Each structure stands twice: as structure tokens, then as C-alpha cells.
Length: 349
Image (cartoon, rainbow, N blue to C red):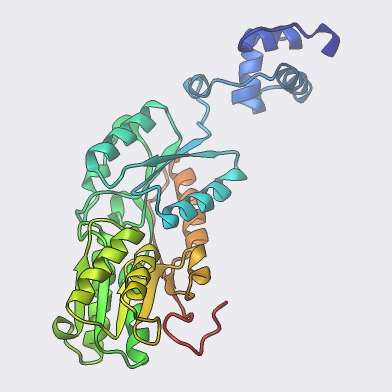
């Protein structure tokens, strides 16, 4: 075959592969899209021709023949967030074995942009989308009847019976953080969170309040809550600066690790040390948390498990099986104690 390989300029076409393999173009198409329809010997010849010519199938053309797309959309709130980047890596690893790829999109927490991205993904005929919703609403009605009947699995959002969803119990995570601080003897505690429009932060704050109520404390008196518009290091520093203007708390619980890193900077700039003057807890337990200046106590989210389950749910949902039943999966977070709250703790845990 190699000796008869034609010289090509420009993209290799389907008929070029058919000519080299000595088969009809329909046979090439079936080999790519429905290999079970092609005799193994013929399929091998066609695959060799594809490899020899470097032919790249047109993804949209494949889908039009009835083949399932190998592209999965992932729409997150913030591509700069280490949590979402670690989630994207976990999802990519989870779908790699089934020869799928992940297309990452950033809604920036904007509902209009999110809607445009979902429409674009439907137009690209992706297999489905994994979506971290931007809506502040507690229900998921806006994600029913999407363009092109796009299959969607909701991430970090309990979607109800009309959607598959996988989330981590944010209320429980907030309670875990404050329970830990209370057990260490801290009573004057602050919560620094992102926008109250983001459910994750309101749920974590609610868990923090409940932990205080459970031990007989009044969160209105003992818990100071500060919200900022962003979720990055500078936002955490700004929130902590605002907090320190009113006094120094015993401990600070931050809605994510990036906010905690910013809070640490503000504390250091004010001449305060962690944990001697102020104990500090983050959320997510991103990879860098254990390597921070003072290793950070954090609430770990099971990101690998979340990614694996979300990918599995989407592949099942998008398979077109009429017997498919939507599942809602809620995972439990874990407290990881490091030096930022307890000097006796092994900082490399």
C-alpha cells in the first residue's frame, strides 16, 4: 500500500482513503463511525490507509451519520479557580479511557454567557455538557429543554429529579470547619466568602452558623460574616482587611483556599501570625494548600470521585437509553488539619 500512496496537498479527504484502501467511501465511513458493520479484514485495510494518509475525521460529519460525538463540554464559573481546574483534570482522566475529550468553557458566573455557551456546545453537537451552574436560584428549571436537547449533568448543584447531578455537601463542610475551630477553644470566629449569589458560599456559611448553634453559641454575636465579589487571593486579602478594621478574631474560616491565602497575606501585613494570633481554615484543599507558607487546614472535596461520577453520569445520560433514570449524588467533605490551626499537627499531612 505504501508504494501506491498518493502525494497530497491540503487536507486528506474521505475519498482519498477509499481510493488507497480500494473500497467504497461508505466502507470508510462505516469503519470510522460504525466499525461493527465492517468485516475485520476490510476494517484493518481501511485503518492502515487512514494511518498512512494521516486522515482526520470531521467530528460534525461523524455525528450527522449517527455516531456519538467524542467531545464533552465542561462549563465552569471561573477558569482561574484551582478547584475547577483540578475538577477539569479529574474529568479528563475519567473520560480518557472511553476515547472522549473535554472542551473547557468559562461562564464567568454570568447567566447570559452561560446560555450562549450551552447553545454553542449544542450547535457543535457535543455528546453532552457538565455544567457548574451560574444561577443563584435554588432550582434548575432553566436547564430543562436546552438547545438541541443537550444532555447536561450539573456539578456542585443539586438538580432535583429532572437532572443528573453530583455535588459535595457544602453545609456539612462549613460545619466541619467551625466544629474544628470550636474544639480548639476559639469562640470569636469570622467567615470570609465570595458573592452571596453563589450557593456554595451561602451553604458553607449556613453550616458554620449551625455548628455554633449546636454548642449553644449565638452566631449573630460570635460569627462575623464578610462577603466579597470575587473568589481569588486579592479578594481574600480585601475581605480580611475589612475584617481587621473591626478587630482581630480568634479564627477565620474562608469559603475557599484562595480566599484563605489572601487572608493570610492580610494577617501577615498586619503583623499577626498564623496560628499563634489567628487560626485559619480554607476550603477545597487544592494541591497548593499543604505547601502554603503555613500549611493550610482545609475542607477537602473529593475531586477525583466527583469527576469520575460526573463523567459516568453524563456518558449514561447521553447514551439515549430510554430506561435511564436521573441520579443525584451527594459526596461528603473531609477535614484535613495542618499547621494553620494546630501547631502540634504534622505540616505535611
